[in-house]
Length: 456
View 1 (cartoon, rainbow, N blue to C red):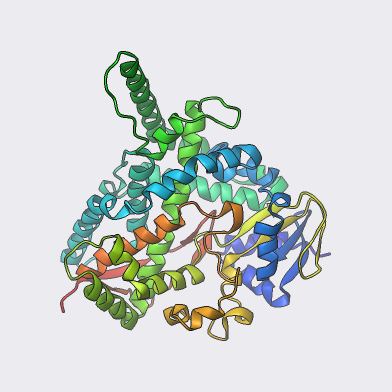
View 2 (spheres, one colour):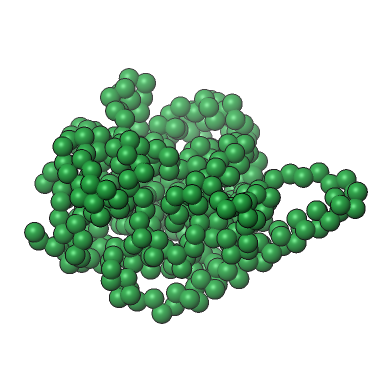
């Protein structure tokens, strides 16, 4: 059997990874190949994805190669955990996301006004904006405020050391997981310093939260009234215990924050970036969304939760963006025991199993001849009926489905509503993004956008 490792690594190095894997799907809905000495199964069929993520979930953990690649960056946090540790962290985090998912509108207002200031300056200067960089800094600020109760103010610093380190470590870890047993070959000279750069921001936040909780408990013992509120995820974990019944130590808390920050920032960055691209390339769609916003919310008012529920076409645009540009385009699992997929395909124990939302979301077998085209109307009341289970899974699925998916939708809808009330934009002529993935999807060459004030 031909080992495709070299061809894959070359495609990734050339920035063609997504299209290369998509090309493999033309050879079949389920494929077996050798990959750097490992048996690799590629499963693109919706029923296979459902089997792996839901019906036989326990047989497909992240696995040791994944843990090894991401431990220096993510530690033992939820993204890099299996078993009891994963279950405990998820159970602890779930109520926080359920309670707070619709606080986003008020929470983003400070940051969205900062974005308006940046856009106004760029318009006055006639500058092109890298929307990916802008939304990356915006979402890291909204995410740190939501998760830590303490925004890191990346929007104030165009060349944020934290953001740079965050991006670098993802790239290194992305290469490591792809090289399986040869992770040591990945150049990573700057990796320890980049982790240190991030910890210089995160650890003081953790230590301050610990000190605050110690003080609160001390005051409570002294009889002082002190209402206890788990008003952010960090405080919530501080007042909880791990899977062994022990309090979380500061390193565990740091790992937890890093993991949730990855999910909270990158999902929203990807969505907002490619929404800007899609709307900029399709001005007629942008105008339809804008008119819906004016009809439901108005030209100046901030949207509330009831408004957001009424913005049906905006939700369709979001879904179509997630279909074409899912935040996590690939996912890799390790098969614990011999298994058989619903289509009869045998999966040997120890195999690496890859499913891809990017590939499945673009397959003509399921989406029609226009599968590669941006068409929000495919999510309209009638056509959406043809979307079968597991044809569309941008937030993963099953027990590991993204906890913050509703928060991500809410933030995107609030942000785009506020943006379209004030601005219009186009993609720079001749510019085409080059999507690729380390852990999450991004555009290798940024997202070159020209903004302008909207005038009716």
